[in-house]
Picture (cartoon, rainbow, N blue to C red):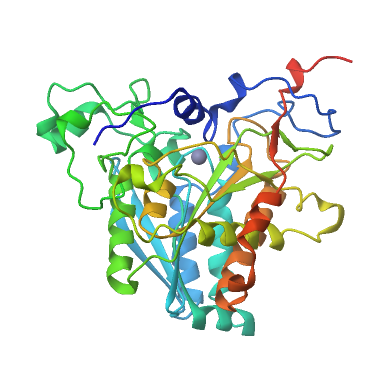
Length: 394
Ligand SMILES: [Zn+2]
């Protein structure tokens, strides 16, 4: 299916998760102290687990949880690395959460390792969570990008043609970067889980659905489809990303270390008939995350903001799965690996843990049903802050 590409949609797509710095205007907000806007050295990737360490850590979590956490290989990347899924809990409500679909966005992976350990533990709280929800985590979906420190996966257009010979002669997908070579996996999703790539659907655009041509998106599709078979609907889908280091909160001088969102589809009827699409469920889920991070004193943990809402991205995992009826939450933590150093990693990982645990707990104890979806609209919006070397000196 093809759709019109509006200027708004194209610009928004450039801005989604990562590349906003070049296009955004200088903000009028005062420059906060310790803004970390480009002053720290990059090449931060060594601060996080590598694939071998991730494999060992998941194995350790599985063993020490004494059966509470089950780890399986859900798929394989093009470079032959395992893509893991870890499952904990036996409740009737299912929460699927993935991290690092963009390989240079690591904090969510570290947060998931920590939370899997906690949810698999022997506290009364962990037992309550396990009884009421089933959590399926895919930590570091883009295992090749994680190891290579690239946003994209590791896949050439020739690899695509070998798998899908019907695409011979078409222009490569718009989200392909030949210099890597690889794909932005987070544009490879389609709300139709049975979709087969068709030549007429290429090169596509950010305003259109994707194709499941990458092994990473195929793996998530298969996990998601399996959970639908088991639970009917995948109740919640959470995607953990990183964004530009420097945003502030509208109306304050606070730096905002995290943006969240539940809005990825402008009009669900544009993409067919999706009767389970439930925007209010997404808004409640985001309010649960927001609430969990309030009341933390001067830590900065409460200064999260709302990601831009004027977007329409059906080819993202969030967009496609929202159409199928999942309540969706995007986490955009400050800083990709190239942007700044290791100073804030502990804090940035912790805020993902607190926010995600807040959602899981609200689902497990049922309190999410009492949240007002309109509170979502009160979350402060995000203001771009330029790198320190591009700020006016006064
Ligand atoms: Zn991302």
